[in-house]
Amino acid sequence: MLRTAISLVLILFVVVCGSVVSGHFWAGEKEQMPESITVTVSKGMTVAEFGRKYNLGRKELKKIFNLTSRNDLERQVDDFGMSYELLSKKVDGVLAIQAEHASKNWFKIPLKGGLWVIFLSAVFTLLRKGKISARNRKWIYMAAVGIFGILLGSDPSPMGTVKDAIVLLGLKGVVFPPRLIALGIFLLMVVLANKFICSWGCQIGTLQDLVFRLNRDSKDIRTLFGQIKIPFIVSNSSRILFFLLLTFVAFIWATDIVGVIDPFKLFKPQVIGMTGGLFVALLLVLSLFVYRPWCHFFCPFGLVGWLAEKISIFRIKVDYDKCVSCGVCSQACPSTVMDAILKQDRIVPDCFSCGTCMEVCPANAISFEYGKRPRPPVGKFSERVVSNMEQ
Ligand code: SF4
Ligand code: SF4
Image (cartoon, rainbow, N blue to C red):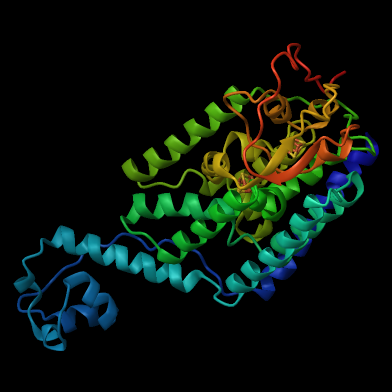
């Protein structure tokens, strides 16, 4: 118990201190949504004058007024027949996109993307070969947290692509195209190899997984101080409700409800705040006992990724000719998903492709393969094979 507690504190310490240092290195990123403005237009004001007043370049003015030629810059704003309310909304949207663009580090983003591709390809190869073990799993999680969290910071993240897109659309009525591109790439990764970006690349996902494994024996099968497998109906209902609430509040009250508790800010401690800090601390303590609580209960990308993983090309599969129905995989799986996969339930929870089931199967019947999962022979799992972690 003491060893686990010390390890958790040590991990937190390294994450916070390392992130503070690397935050200085990436200094200059300031994410702040500009305040909404109400424009005022004086009599006879031209588009060019309007642009100068609100610091808008030609590109932005073109978007707002649908300009077709340079001469349009000399036309009067009132000639465009736009209500001031609509004009304010359009200017607001354009300024929000400008602020988004300015807040991004355009050196770091492609660097992180490239490293993700290299790192995930290496882990994919290991998983395909069945070479992920209890020992190296922890090292891989540590490397993921170190590179994609501590060194490269909280942004971008898989969650941010969904959450920030909803918030920006709700608050300012605009979309930031680079974010949609990133979301598309992350979803492609989910579809290619079952949730791989969450499993092995997400800063917060891998951190929770690392903490969860601190409370397991050296073979990563049994819990040391008790772990709970929450029924999927409970966790997924919470995640769906949270997603709806996030969207509703963003569109109706123009507020970002994730902002104050965003766990990714752990990698940007300067902005986390007291509530956020307490929330992340609680989340990590909970991660000792419940598998990836943020992913299962709250994460918007977790929900979208869960839907996308239904069409994954590579996924955990069971060879029922070899399977001896011992249930060891279900017992070792951190959540209820292996039980659902084994019996091919209609609703299969998130599988984080951690490879634990593959490693512990005594019949070597589980692999990370492409194609559909086969159905189990009738009667093979008439009894519930899943064993609770408490046993
Ligand atoms: S579900 Fe978990 S791993 Fe995936 S993006 Fe969300 S926090 Fe990261
Ligand atoms: S079924 Fe469970 S143990 Fe197997 S890879 Fe998925 S999450 Fe891990």
